[in-house]
Structures are given as structure tokens and as C-alpha cells.
Amino acid sequence: MATVQELKRRVRSITNTRKLTRAMELVASARLRRAQQRIEAMRPYADRMMELMSGTARAAGNVRLPLLQRRDTVKTVAIVPITGDRGLAGAFNAQVLRRALALMREAQAEGQEVRFYSSGKKAQSTLRFRRLPLEHAWTGFSDRPEYADAQAVAHALSEAYVNGDVDRVLVVYNAFVSPLVQRVTVTEVLPIPEHVLTTEDEEREQDTLAGDFIYEPEPEQILERLLPVYVETELYRALLESAASEQGARMTAMRNASKAAGELIDNLTLAMNRARQAEITQEILEVVAGADALAG
Image (tube, rainbow, N blue to C red; front, side):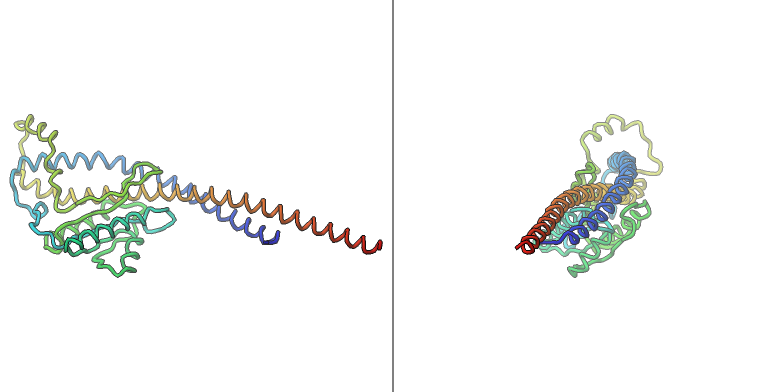
């Protein structure tokens, strides 16, 4: 049985740890509010971009642009897991990596080669530890990604797709639902998904307003400029979703850790009181036994 002094040291240590987890929870909560505001401001822009892409593609008709070309045979798949640079966020990083590795196994089962382009130190370290083919890794901006970061990732992926190094690009990230819920999402970024260019509601709206638009320059040229921007926008959206999800997951994890620490402190305090009571009882018995010995 542990002594009173040992139990005191454990209680003191856990109390200090709980102070840290509470502080981290408060920091994550403040960062979550800012990240949530950014993603809420970004979502309408991304949705509007899809509408603009759809209308321009319909006006352009059948065009052959590199980012739109779907390969008859997919030989190489690029998987882009988006994780954080730090841990202490529950299952935030692990669930993205699990999904990315599951996609790798599915692609390999179909005879396809897999290449990884990672975002975040956790993805980079895991892929290198497993000695998987990591073509490029971006780190240092998981907490607060900027549009320039998304542009760097999009440029590398678009270049690999246009050059024929990869035939398909999948992005795996945590979509922000609420501070308590982060949903693992897989998005096909390249080639540009067909549903982005054809939506029934938008098609009816476009048919109604077809005579009200004059394109300058030609729709084909506008679409050629919009496609790279669309890829950048989708990646920026994924980075912002991941950033908000990371703060939500960390806030929840630290709150649970603080709660567990409090329960452990209560249990140790109870054990410490029992140990102290046992020591007092033992001392009383020793005094009584000594008194009986002197009396005898």
C-alpha cells in the first residue's frame, strides 16, 4: 500500500497536469472560435465558386482542358492526408491516417500505385515511419492555414496530374461539424468531379437565364483560368475545415483529460485519507501496546 507522502506527491503531480489541460482547453476554445469564423466565411465563397464553374462549363460546352481530362485507366493515385502538426487532440490525426491507409489498400487491391502528398507533421512522420512513398510534405500551418499554403499544395498536385505522374487525387481530412463532431471526409480533387460541372438545379437556372450572359473572353478561356482556382479553393476549404476540427478535437480531449484528472485526484485523496487513518490507528495501537507492557 502506498504511503501518505507518496499519495501526496501523486495528487500534487496530477493537480499540476490538470492545470495544464485546463489551460490548453481554454487556448483551443479561443482558437476554435477564430477557426470556425474563417470556415463559415469560406463556405459561401466555395459554394459560389462551384456555381460559377458549373455555369461557365455549360456555356463552354465540350472542352478539352488538362484538369478536366479523366484517364481511361487509373494507374497512379495520389492521396493527400491533412493532419495537424501536434498531437493531444484525441483521434483527430489517427482517424485521417486510418482512412488514408484504407484508401491505399483499396487502390493497391485494384492494381493501382499509390503516392502520398501529406499536410501536417503527424502525417509526415507516420508515412515516413511506415516507409510509404511520400512525394511531398507540407508542415507548419495546420493551426492557421493561409490561402498561399493551399496554392502551394494545389500547384504541386495539379502539376503532377497534368504531367501524368498521377491519374487521380484524393484529399482526406476532418470536416468540421461541431466542436464535438469531426467527420472524416474524402474528396476527389482531380480530375474535376463531374458533379461540380453538372447540377440539375443550376442547369435549369442556367437554361432560364441563358440569354442574359455575355462572356468576355470566351467561356473556354474563363474556364481554363477557373479550374486551377477551383482546386486551390477546395484545398483551402479542406485546410480550414481541418484547422477548425483540430481545435475542436483538442478542446474536447483536454476537457476529458481534466475531468479524468479530477476523478483521479478524488480517488487518490480518498486513498490518502484512508492511509493516514491507518497510520494513526497503528500509532494508537503501538502506544496502547507500550502502555500495557509498562503496566505489566
